[in-house]
Image 1 (cartoon, protein in one colour):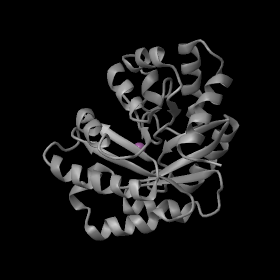
Image 2: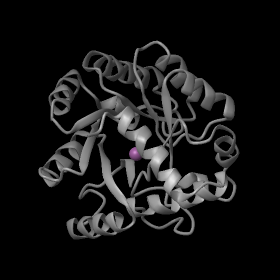
Image 3: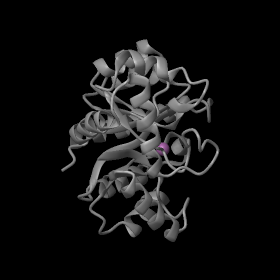
Image 4: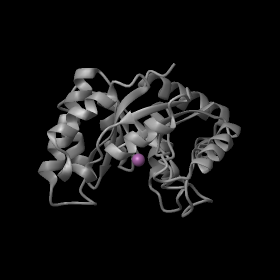
Length: 252
Ligand code: NI
């Protein structure tokens, strides 16, 4: 069994029939649990509306750094309410994105810190978005007692080891299958002991589907790639990464 630990699966990105179809395909490919993100107020409300009953779906709610400029105190209070939902297993994706906007670093850091405090207070893991900001992300995370996943990890071996030492897992998805990705060298060295699988659907489809809309069924292709890379069986990839995900997100 596989777990897709990070995906966006709302009707902002997919038609509702498409979602049903995708979930069927994913189940056939061995994906049995999903952590669906809500990283804006509208995405959170959307997923709460479409997944009231599906026990295979858990949630991660938090405000993405791209919205940092518009987040108000009231929004943060509302986030606390959203997070009280019994199927929320993490706060995320939260973090820093200097690629998207390099001019509001202070504001991004403020919103990031507010949400880390919330995670600390509620004892919830976090899923971290970090783009062109890995040093600052590390510095800030090291100041809080939080654990979680560095979503779509793409740093060096040294950074991987630093995050692992801090208690974090690395979220690995389609990017590792890209021809020019340096990530395979990192994972070949550290193995899967601190890795969880994710698709980040609808983004970042693995090879051979690169450029197409992603879905959780593609976890299987990421797992196949890792099995080849590490010369282990696909069952072994499933076993290790699923155990890691169950542990970090306290999934039942
Ligand atoms: Ni995402």
